Length: 134
Length: 111
Image 1 (cartoon, rainbow over the protein chains, first blue to last red):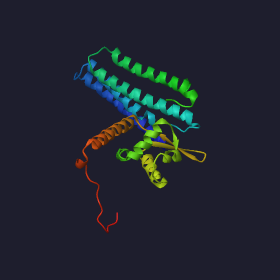
Image 2: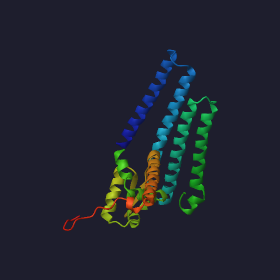
Image 3: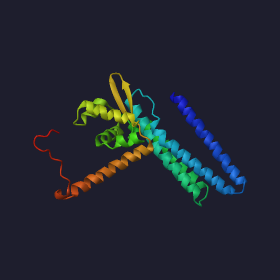
Image 4: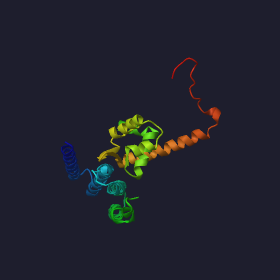
């Protein structure tokens, strides 16, 4: 039942995403907004979608067999959620600002690198050997 | 969302969430931190489960509670905790005469 609900939510989100992109393209073709504005609006949409997804990331904890791995997974999901939510919001905000295109991407890349680094540290680092992440 | 606000409005439940932030804990371990009866703690756990703020898993005979907060719920917990700490500090800084007196019972009445 949960899988069906998740699938339905994902399909609705994907449909909304495609409809939004098509609408932006139509508005752009109609000459109401410039190509640059359409691209920026889509980037804002992407950033907000990532922030929304990241908000629920820490809730996606599964079943566990030993408390140490559960603690690691929990802390990695929490850090990932915060990093991607802040990264997504920063991506959306900087896409609106008159800054080079590389700035929003660099912010997102920083969030991704932080999550990767933390995940490696949590699962392989000293905290894991002691029986749990920080 | 209403269930989340209801769950976070109680200091005991907030303290439970703060304890679970450190590590997953059994119901017994959690109950040991509070000077309240086990049925009262069970009621608190039920409210937290209903708001989907904790995850429950049975390992053998032990029931393990884990934190299950979204990023916004996590931020809300931090905000409510900070706000209540500030409110408590302001309350204790007030002169005793300015603080509201506890309700007193008249003779012959029952609570």
